Amino acid sequence: MSEADFRRQEPGRAPSFVALVLLVITIEFIYRAKRLGQLHGLTLLLAYALEPILSRYAAMRAWTLDHRILACFVFRKNALSARGGVP
Image (cartoon, rainbow, N blue to C red; front, top):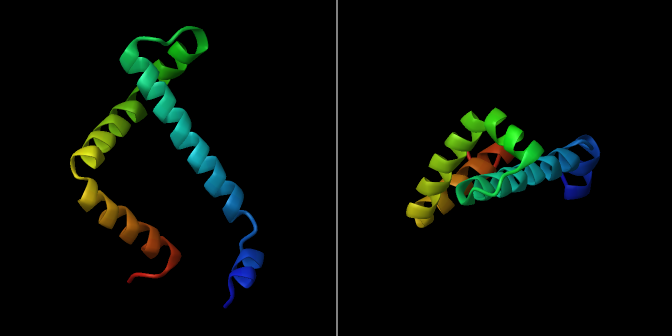
């Protein structure tokens, strides 16, 4: 199966991936602003609503920064298994 055939079979996959990337970027910006105490207005309310997600994100981010080499293998294996490349 070529890549073009794969894209034709799952047309909603690319927009979902873009949305996921934008969500992670948004969480990173909120996380950094919260650490610096620069949240105001709506972002402050959003940060309080996302507190459980931000806490998990902070733990995952700290682990990834502490274990960069291992994180590369873990995330690569997860990405390949999601695509069906690794059993």
